[in-house]
Image (cartoon, rainbow, N blue to C red; front, side):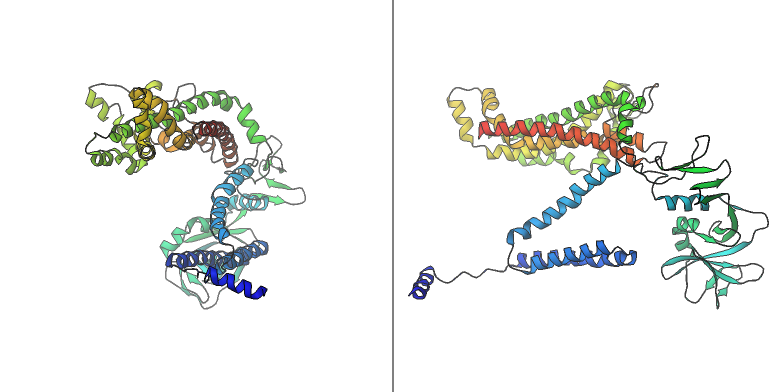
Amino acid sequence: MAHDAHAAADTRRGPRPRREVTTAFVVSRVAVLAVAAALLLYAAPPLAADGSWVSLALLCAASAGIAFLYLTRRFVPAKYLIPGTVCLLAFQVFPVLYTVSTAFTNFGDGHRGDKQAAVTAIETGSVRQAPGSPEYALTAAVRDGELVFLLVDPKTKQVQAGSGRGLAPVTGAQVGITGKVLRAPGFTVLKAPEAAARGQEISKLAVPTRGGVIKANGLSRAVEGRASLVYDAACDCVNGENGPWRADGARGYFVNARGDHLAQGWQVNVGFGNFTRVLTDPTISGYFLGVFGWNLVFALASAGGTFVLGMAVALALHHPRMRGTKIYRIALILPYAMPSFAMLLVWRDMFNRDFGLINQLFGTNVDWLGQTGTARAAVILVNLWLGFPYMFLVTTGALQAIPRELTEAAAIDGASPWHGFRKVTLPLLLVALTPLLISSFAFNFNNFNAIQLTSEGGPFPAESPQVGATDLLITYTFRLAFGAGGAQFGFAAAISVFIFALVAVISAVAFRRTRKQEEVYA
């Protein structure tokens, strides 16, 4: 009886609809599986060769999970959530976490590797050719993917292969008239352009010998020399001139008794040292508040100015009596369609005092980018020109979503056009566009290109050549961390964390006010 009842119910409901398999459905699955397989094939061999078995296992597990997910009919929501989550982790979460972790290190020029790499660089970099030491004709070659030196002794004409493990004889090599090896069994001789492309790698290779090491002197000659600085593991120091140089684990340097250090160091954890430097170094903290204040003005003026200008143009073209709106819209979005970096360079030349179009057009002789007030006005003007088409487009879309009945009802109630705009149109626009305004503020707060390509942060006062009148925090950071002192990625990351915290707090406050506004006009 129960079975008959269920059968009758199924008959009343009719046959179950078959899931339609569309072309887009198949293509999307194939695309995801193809990308996962490509990543697996690309990353698996290097991980296996490097012995990173944990990473290889995680990669294989992730690939198997993706294959299972997209080859089954179940877990439909996960099929859409997983790609977005992976992209979020890869392009947002991981860069932020990596930047924060870098901020606690001394990573930068001279501190890019570990201690062993620093010792190797110090010893090989101090090699000097001794009087009477052998010289060889050098030919760069590759054996099993490894760069090697084919060395020809000019006296005996014997050929040896030199690598990081030492020297080994080579049999059956053909040597040309100039002493270069033309071919050798088991080796791929690099042609001149190929050797030139790997010049940095060739200069770093050091072949150990009994009397020292063999290093390249150009691309066709190698000499044997001795290192003037030698590491001694017993004392954890480098012996040599002006030494001994003892390891300082807190700074990541080899330091002598006078406090000097060798140029090559290694990466170590410095704790809050980079953050403390930002707050306590007078050459940095003394200008931080001034730059931050101008940064706020620039971001607010750019975001607010582009919104006001874009909204005004959108309202004008939204009027029912307006004709030729398509032509106007095409003309108005041209700045948005142009490459921004090219337009910034064009505007920089237009503001030039000697041959700029603006001075020639108005018959003036103003040094626009050489004075604080005019330079700041100039970069804001350029940013308005580049940014208002975007606000014009989004405001046009938001205006079309506002029912005309609301504005007509306000006019019937006796509201003037201004009051109708202020009480009806503007609040509804702000509800829709405030998140975009916050995003625009965050973007302009770190708008590196707008400053660097237009004014380069200047003008610079004579008493402070490291901070300019139009510098934002991001350009100021760039100059501090990557200026004459070399690249200081750890220090740059610390300042980036400060900037991130400032923008996050301002954006969080703005979003909270946005939610309150949405509740009022919901």
